[in-house]
Length: 591
Image 1: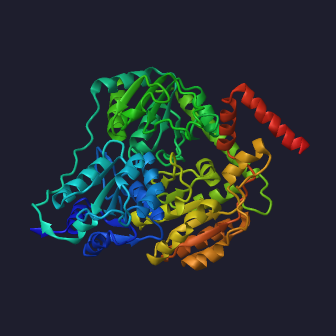
Image 2 (image 1 turned 180 degrees about the vertical axis):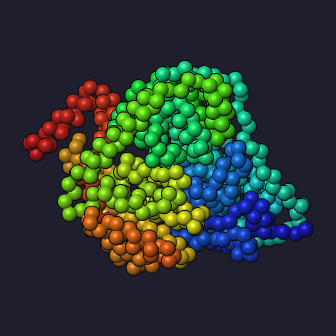
Image 3 (image 1 turned 135 degrees about the horizontal axis):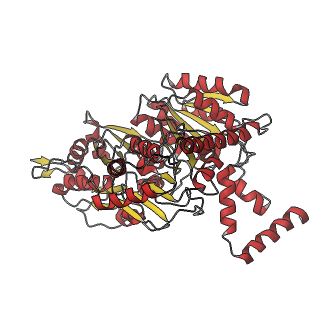
């Protein structure tokens, strides 16, 4: 049997269930693209920039990938099909986002010829070395018989343990020239995640059962275990807080949902609900910097930590009981163990008191935002209230990196059935526009609402051309204030001035819409919010991308911004605190 590497690669991708590739063709991968064109299963998507393509692939996996839990192996993952060298470095931010976020991704690149002796070839960089710091693994195929097994191994690595991106480089000469090959292996799906040891489950159940008040902290790794989380929270009468990446893992309208985080950077509902907790069940979170408010969270000594990645245990907070495994599998076993113990349920008064306190704190926090005078601009709370009222429970929300991210975390609760994706630890600006496109491709029948600041939007807005070309009805709500407001707020108090955080000439969103083929909707004030949102949804339902120009008011800082600033400053050495205070006073009163 004679085959080319391009034919073998497409065969492997089809066996893995891949449905879309993202990238740009070039001289080192045109054979791959030509073979993808022959596939009835795989749709190649031409992007404007490989960085946007990588964010699309990341979002596609976040929405589509089902994990390897008790309900079986997942579905197609995001796959890049890019040229070597510049294609890889352009895509690096999106690949890095997937790497730190635990998102499976295949990165298929072309490679320089390996059958000729000349040096200084086009795109001649060591891609495996370049990719070492932001991929789980990187392979270079050296023969035709290696193509299919290598892609299978890349997929296995990408989707197992703590997921992440894996690169496979296929030299162009192997793509171009056919040769004799053995019968390629057939793909065998991995086994389901194994059940945890009964002993450690028993230890965790005992710890939680004897606690006076349990809290639950849920991250992205718990997203497929929502039913178990709800049952555990109700059984233990436990308030639930989430990480930023895990905002939708527990229903925001549930009476035990307290908010995002539980440090001094959290909203009052979460701070107050967790203040009395003497035990914590943490699921699918590694206690990284953002959800802990710059590591300001006070975590009880009685910590049960559940995660697929054993590297996270005892890294930032010591665990009394650490359980390695898939959240869905572990929580099912833990729930069963707790139910067999038949713990005495909390008194009805205690259950009611906790829920009432959470509800009262949430109502008071929302009222403070609604009462904030935004002048002739859009009050964030009123915008999110109007959006929440209209968006269906099964909708997808895509955020970027900025002030809007934490406004959404605090003011836009995610109901059961929703999904929310956002950049987190890698925290790349420019994520949301292409990620919204990837999300819509993964779930074409669901509404996708992108919320993005104007600074982030400017980085990747030309990818809306990709949405228009493919008739993808994504709504891009652009919070426009003419500044990089999250950093501007962080600059203003300590420095008493802004440096390189004002965008200068305000971006003409109507012009961007015209240039990219999108519809344009203005949202200049609170009174027009509901109508503008409705108009945008109607246009998107016709298969048009829509840019909503939101004249946002960023005058009121979030609880996250205030709390994290305080936590960071309180951790400075005394001498440095005094230096900052002297500079602030001098600039504020004597400059």
